[in-house]
Image (cartoon, rainbow, N blue to C red; front, top):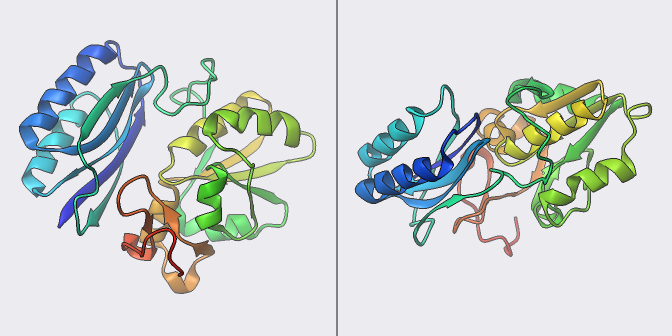
Length: 243
């Protein structure tokens, strides 16, 4: 069984190239596979290991550089990544808005246990900040699809479709929390007053909320060989299967 860690953190990295080199060395030493993205604004990625001790070693290395880490653990029956990649980019999640800093200003975090009540409120506009092909695999009741092919298109959606005077309450979500955290920061900067986002994303919700109480419909797409996850973060059939 493979241990899989999806993680991110918005926090200043003074020397991204140096940090990436240190991560590559630690990944090699601990036989880690997956992808990590490093930028001056933080870290993002998903890694996997067949050895729990090696995974703990790797997470310890990452945590020494960050005062906190948004982390979601799950499991995979088979190796979920072919190899290890550590990339240095300008953003850890690309929205092409360099003036936005989620480490300084974001919307209101909502725990998974409180999410259902929020999205049932008819005054709340529920937005899926993921790409349209992810939306098609599964989403929450009442959620709208911004119609984006990449997260970099989200600001255009906001400019064309949202209005602070009309949309008083907005609730957003994504797979693990990183995209909606940046999106909420963007909306706050644009003058939207009540902006909420699901803490830990869909993955946290699927782990914490019983299926009988769930407002989630369909499957959650993940960017590895598992393709989709269900309640309890259980592996599902491939994305082109029914169910």
